[in-house]
Amino acid sequence: MLRNRNRASELPEVRCRGHQAIFPRQRNLHESSPGREARYFAGDVEDADSPRRQLQPFQVSGGPAWVRSEYFDLNTEATESPSQDRLFLMMQALLAERFSLKIHFETKDQSVYVLVAGKTGKRPATGLQITTEGSCVKADSAEPPDPAACGSLGMGLNHLEAHEVSMSRFAEALTRVLDRKVIDRTGRTERFNISLQWLPDEHQALPSGDAIALPPDTPAIFTAVQEQLGLRLEPGRALIDLLVIDRAEEPSGN
Image (cartoon, rainbow, N blue to C red; front, top):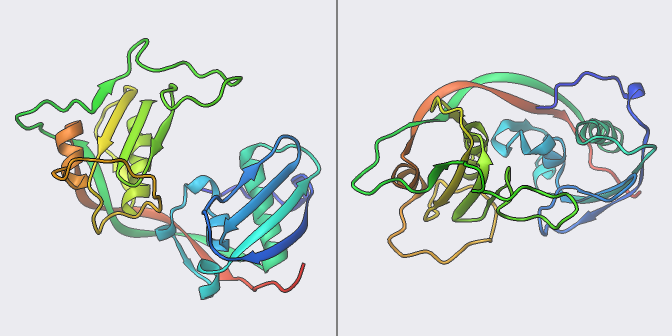
């Protein structure tokens, strides 16, 4: 969550070369190029102020309706090459300048899912395996990304593949799928290789068309988590951080 209170004067200068209202298309929020430039495209203001997707849509409220329906293409340039965290702080300052954006954070008690250890059925849960030496590919930054690289996690509309990830990171991925906070209470501290397939239903929230062909008897995600991973998703309640948009003004021109 973005809670860094650094003042804008402590951040590298970022200049916006211009913005353009566009029709919604692929929701790729940010694209960094080598050096100082970064283009933010097909993003709404609600998305742009949710750094690293740590804040999901259900954690953002307030503001006029257009912040969730209007999309903007921002072309920016910074005076240095910032880290990802500093880049988002700079983006927040830019949004305040361009959109008169004012926000605050608050915490509320909300419904969540709790990920716990479960019982497997007649068949063993083969989708969850403790990572061992050689069970994933050591990443090489000089090579193209390998979907089987250690530390990778990829998912589509009905599948998830991960290699050498923590249970808390897997819970974060399930949060994106279910549009509700998932909290890890499995007590498992190992790193895992995970393979999960499910049939999307009304709980599905992940905006992705990257689906794979699956048998017609593939279960919904709650059953799939139990049968394929030996885990269980239970309803619960917890204090959740929320971002509230107090003010946002739609810009005109560049």
